[in-house]
Image (cartoon, rainbow, N blue to C red; front, side, top):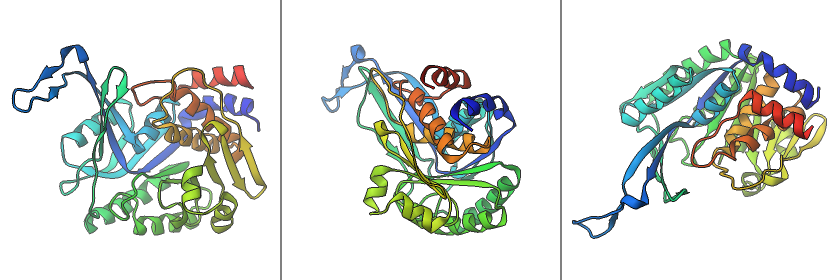
Amino acid sequence: MNIRELGKKLAAAPDIVITVLGDFCLDKYLYIDQKKDEQSLETGLTAYQVTKKGIYPGGAGTIVNNLRSLKAQTLCAGVIGDDGEGYELLSALKKINADTKLILTDPARCTSTYTKPMRKGKELNRLDFKNFEPMSEDSERQLIKNIYTAAKKSNAVIVLDQFIEENCNTINSNIRKELAIIAEKYPDLIIYADSRAYIDMFSGIMIKCNNHELKNKKLDGAALFKKNGKPVFVTMGEEGSAVYDKNGAHTAPAIKVEGEVDICGAGDACTSGIVLGLALGAPPEVAAVLGNIVASITIKQIGVTGTASIEQVLEVIENFY
């Protein structure tokens, strides 16, 4: 199968069910009108005036947003806080018709949030909310049950391990162990993990990381494939991506993008394309091309958490392939 043949198969995307498991976050953009700046009477500092908000699913939600834009069905599994940010996140997910029944709310947690003030078209210092303590044992047990429920209904499971604080977020050491068990129990199920800090701690499943994360771990893609026995995807920015599998190493070139870009969420967009491609029967090296195409479309969308539609993907395939 080549990328043009995969493009034709995208018509079957609505029949594909993909579980997205991991760190669901809220992306909250605050759009500031600099013409309305005021001086604070209390501090003497400039008080920025927010005139509009943009609320988007972030983290694992970015993957869901892209999958839904590509017409795939999605099941969401994770743990968020019982707070206002959690309400906004669930509302944003439901707005795109994502299934959120398997997301747990835990009053002891905060909903991880990236607050992004935007002024003069540029992002200022971000304000982050995230968790620095482990989830409760009750939440962990229920989450594991939810993962098994989702796995039985899915063509693929995407795991997003977003944060570097070990065992403080959705994907901890116990969840990794359960994923290895699920992979053994359901050998035909595509399980694919993207982790910023713990790519070497997953077993028996596909792995995705970027070249910087790989270098920081002093690993290489071939070694990760040998360890897990499953394809490894390494994104390399403008150089495209590399794939390591039983047939050796492959490269998937990047799509050249002109003008201003916003790379926030590009890795998640790439993941969406890769896993949808795999679920539609594409070999890893062709799925990687689809991932690069999806990312090339989203990075051209400035000041929002971008998505790509099937129509946009087909246009890129027509123009470049």
